[in-house]
Length: 464
Length: 66
Image (cartoon, rainbow over all chains, first blue to last red; front, side):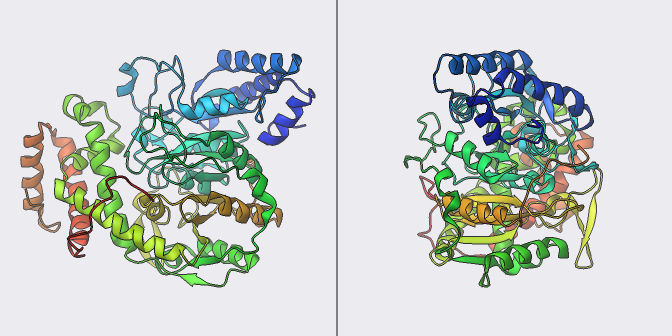
């Protein structure tokens, strides 16, 4: 078995059967990271000692005839805003270097560890998650494994790139306006932003709390499902954690799409993109037999409201540091945080009231649709320093446009999954599947069908 | 404090200076231009929302349920 190309499920099965030890798997991942990461810059910390110790624990459980868990020996890594016991939670900043090391692991890290997975390191991100590029001035840019001259996307860029490059089969990130789905799309891997409140954010450095989600990345829909299932469960330590019982999606992957009402998003979602990104949606819709088109209203105002909420809440969290040490912020985020601090209270309240209005419109749509199909991204990954691009003959700034299709759904907390469209020899593009609240299972059924039929796929990046 | 019109540079600069002072934020010269640029974007976003009347009984959910 090639461990670089092996998925989480295959590794766990081999470890559980005793065909390979968890230590050998961890050592292989660590060696791969040491060799390949310098060219990509996914990792900000490699936790070799911890990884080997945890792998040994998994091997001891197996040797003793016990159950090491469904993700036995699977290496994983986390965006560096997840607490890792004994490690300072950087959240992409140098300011946080002054914080004490985390006392315990974040809830999501504990959940994957309980399932037998082995944490190997922490991953690069935009400072305080405020960006779609992972162009981090303190720690350097994370490069796209499909073309290192291009961005990985962000803010969970290290997470997506590490999975795309085959450094780890699983990673965790966070998503406020698209920060899981955007890098998943640019790097050609699967990424899930679940329903708001579905997965615990306890022990995660927040960015904009009323919009923050966490979720997994993987190179197959089965692996993504295994991770999501291991992460589910109410957590009293997260004030927005859903009280709903976990609903495992792994047993539902073979359910197919029969009985699901599928539609393609029209209007904004069918215009603000390069032809390639729209063609990818058409290919997916054709494969699924999804001919219906539906529109969501007022998307420009949705984006305005989401940006106001994000900037206000984000600035509030960092106000003390903005006052005391503004020069220690990444110049790429500093002006936006400062401007967010200046937003009048009425703007934030109006944005939150508008959010309620749009939530009701989204509920109307999802009374008649089970899964909505949109592009994840308007274009392929831009070059590292690319400032502008052209869409429909108009020149637009690249970075503010990246989240045009992801932001409206995190705004109202809907579950959304980015699946990489199979485009051999071309740069990755994702399609975004969106469902009603708590209907993640529908997303997984659609994505599994597309993967089975070869319409979406996430091979290890050839140039990695 | 009423936000300024996004297309009025003097009003934007004045708003940034006075509201930053109110909050105790010190804007060094090399930051100020970037902050004004961002505030102009926010002012456009606010104008978009201002142009969309909402009923008085529409309140943000005290407990957010997607």
